[in-house]
Amino acid sequence: MQVPLQFEFQNDQTFASFFPGNNAEIVTQLQALATNGQEQQIFVWGDAGSGKSHLLQACCQQAKLVGKDPFYLAFDAGNLPAPTLLEGLEDLELVCFDNIQTLADHSDWEHALFAFYNTHRQNNHKLLLAADCPPKFLSFALPDLKTRMAWGLTLKIQPLRDDQLIEALTYKAHFLGFDIPPAVGRFLLNHYVHDLAALWLLLDKIDRATLAAQRKLTIPFLKQILADET
Image (cartoon, rainbow, N blue to C red; front, side):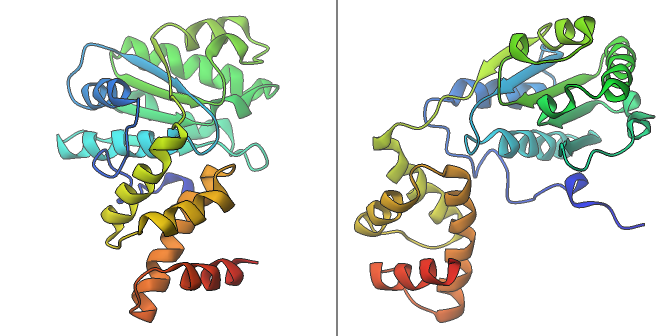
């Protein structure tokens, strides 16, 4: 049976490809969680495009490198699987749940997650959760589940400052294998600075476009790529 997309590990989303900015401590904590750190549970939260999914994927990649069997699932409010999906996950050493806030108001999922949480924790396994808000603001109807979300370490992903955005673009582009001149980076940010999630996706398309055309990235070429997006 083909594995659904949300179960697949993205091999390019590693700690090495993540620009930390002011989040070096979070990276350190998650690297420890993926290996043999003392924390049993970490809850990360931040705005869209801040890197939550990237960090969860990176944690899974790191766990695989040390011989562990991790699991990653990004919840989609419009396409939730059956809660029976959790069956057996309590035996895995590292489980990562992304977009945990989307389970609010889904009673079957809340109760199933509560049962999973208790068993997984009793097995002394690691849990990594991500949401767009801290645990206290999760609108779970099950109070005990909401309480458990705050049992471990809670970390906020700090947004990049304006002066860090060019550096982040350069860093990510270099990892992909192409260069972004400063003037091109500034032009790109002027168009996408308010939508970081789209910006990171666009970098992949720029990479493919420059490779296919065998051209360096210039503002005219960037405009052409952006025009193809509309």
